[in-house]
Amino acid sequence: MHITLPVNRARWRDIDWIIDLVTATVVPTPLGGWLVPDERRRPAVVAAVARIWIEHALLFGDAFLLKDGAAATVWFHRYRPIPPPPRYDERIEDACGDHAVRFRRLDHVLAARRPDEPHNHLAFLAAPPDAGRAGQAAAVLAGSHRWMDTLGLPMYAEVHSSADRRLFRRLGYRERHRLSRPDGVPVDLLWRPAPPVGLGGARSAVPALGVGRQPGSEVG
Image (cartoon, rainbow, N blue to C red; front, top):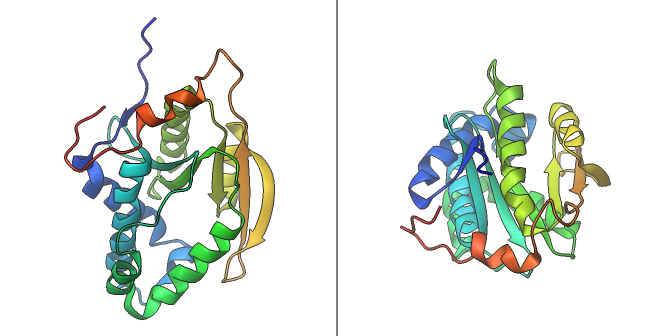
């Protein structure tokens, strides 16, 4: 039976749209304010850093968009070690200038508690804050799960707000750890177990879905 999902698998040509969604999501948050205190520079800096990681995710993971383009998720397939983005140190300095140290501190804190076992890592839940935000976030995350469950791996997310925490728990995530960001705000590290056999897929399917996608590829 064919099932129509509420999301499309993103392609390289969708990167700019996803960057805009991530930027609109992060800029007004306390995290965005701590990363880039300068309000005028904040959108450009966040967008430049988002580009680094979204491009990398389309080579070593996946991204999904709601069919109307209102929200997106960005994932890494962490079933084996993933190299850093090309020229990462140079690009983060160029993107952030004096703020690069804050992005590096956040990266270090989050990476230190990331699980070693194979999993799919949600890097971004991009649903800008508007009247439909709650429904869009729920729809894009649930739709992404329908794709990602075919890989037969657990899912991992770093959740920075109480509203998102409630959403993730409704969708089957459970608290694994809690840590404090460099700005002192707590972050919940959540884990969603792999689907039971028969509801998901085999781990051997992982490379076929996203890893190694090249710029310009129209897989999907």
